[in-house]
Length: 29
Image (cartoon, rainbow, N blue to C red; front, side):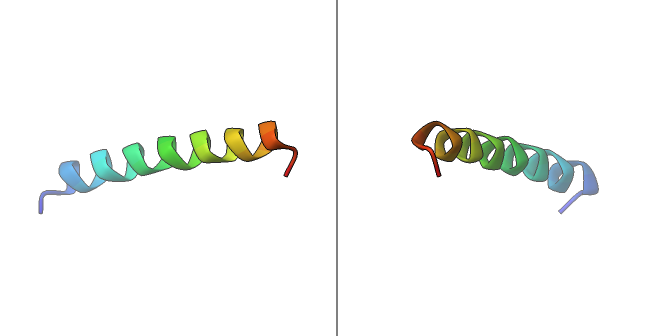
């Protein structure tokens, strides 16, 4: 896989993780 594709996937994963952390914070965890 090209490095650019890997970077794009990593960026998308980081955004998902940030969203999940925001959910946990909203739940009080």
